[in-house]
Amino acid sequence: MHDRTDGPTALFVLGQSLVVRSYRSFFALLTQPSRVRVALAAPRRFRELGGQLVECEPFDRPFDSAGGDYPGFVLKSCNLHVQIVLFAGLFGALRRFFRPHGGKGPDGGQRQIFLCMAEPYSVTAFAAWLTARAALGANFVFICYTAQNIFKELAFPLRFIQKFIFRRSAAIVVVGREQESVLRRHGYRGICLDFPLWFDSLRFHPQARTQDKLVIGYGGTLSLEKGILDLLLGCEVQARRWGQSCRLMIAGAGPLAGQIRERCQRLAQLGWTVNFAGPLPAAQMPRLFFRDRHFGRAEQDDTALEGAVRPRDH
Image (cartoon, rainbow, N blue to C red; front, side):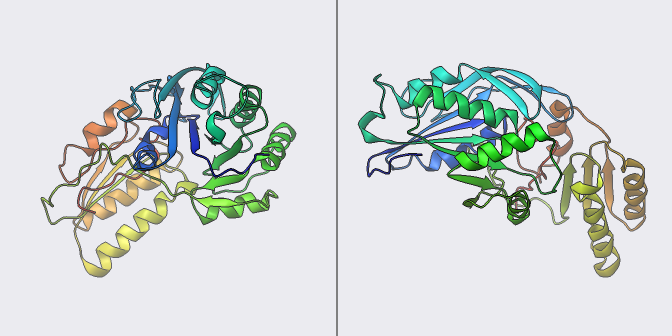
């Protein structure tokens, strides 16, 4: 699939959502001091699972321009589904990054790595691989990404795409062990790279602890597979067994909303401070979680309703 060389490495990271922005500080570490050239690309607009259309903010340094060794590309896209994101301008972005001086082969014998942060069964990954093949030929390393922790049978077109991507991926980046086990059940026999969820340390600044009360925050879909009932059970056990009074903040909607409201009321009776805000637009999430200085700044993108809020002193 590619020629192994001792030359420099060029890494192009494409996010089918704005999650690539949350990882940018990780990729920025690769630029210090290193022979790795890194480019990040994200859609200009992305429709998240909740149906909200989120605009991509400009990239920060070092990914703050479309030129140089560390470009940041914000591409126009057609968002038909969360797993069907088709990029306009991806071909040109790949060529400009991997072939800045023109020509048909890799510049200076560099190793070309294309990390597509999209599920292996997605139309996004399929279209991205085809675009890279057309732009770069066969001399590139393709790696995709998965966050699926629940095994599900796929329809024939998605099974075809997934097998296609399995055969052409040098490795698949996984969020954790559960995601790797799902891949294995689907028949993947290749390399898995552990790549846990990240936060943007360019925007996250720990501060001194300002209060003794532990604050727990959850933002996301209120459904069984998200683990919200387990979280509330753990809170209740802690409240009854150790008598510790904490603050709980929840935002989201879903089939378990009624049960969660009842459990929140029980926690309030046990002395906890509870704020169950219900469904909120992504733009209002910071107002809920940041009004207490105990919390750090989270990404205002499609992950805002999916990830746990990180307290500043933990």
